[in-house]
Image (cartoon, rainbow, N blue to C red; front, top):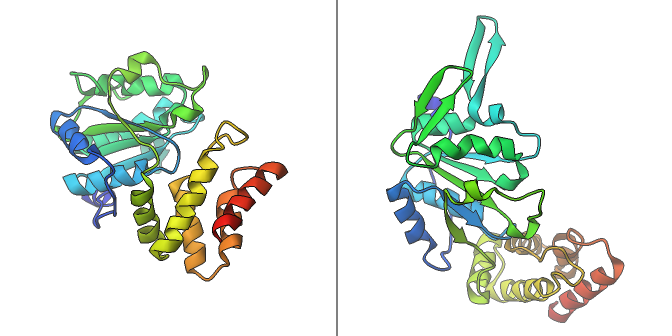
Length: 267
């Protein structure tokens, strides 16, 4: 069992550049064992932040990429048949609660609402998880913490968290960093020089201004890093930006032309 826990230990510090007081607030929430909800656009650093905080707090990190086919059993656990008969296998949520890990449910709104209800007993003063199929009431380890994330830009009547779920969490808002900070992030993560990183950030800002005017989502910091890595690897900057920034976010020819023109302004 220790080997399984060790697999979830973050052994090396994930580089993270704070943009406000999110590190201090998350630490305070962990001290109070307050469940945390991270809200922000895709690719803005939510997952890296959780990894960094797990390392900083010295806790194992169990990450679950939520999807619409995920059932409560996928989270909690189920009985399995093997050569020795029937055995119980903890799901990731149960494993984290049992061993005092941080359980991170990424893009939780992608999961069905009847699945997310399973987290409710762990997110109030009870801090318990009923394993009904097993007949066990699991009391969460004192160091257990539940963290969820989602992109409010993708909310709809069909995909949103219930108020009964939201109000169990403290929330941190994430967005695109200020240009100076984002330039430092892109340069550090991609390996390009500061001037090239600055140009990529400027292109990203132009693209984000088009959100709601032809684009469903702006260029993420993650995408800027991808472009920077291509450039650092010797790819022509315009080709790198076309591949990493323009083509992934739109198939509209006019919008592609507009974005390509923005790239040409800087490269």
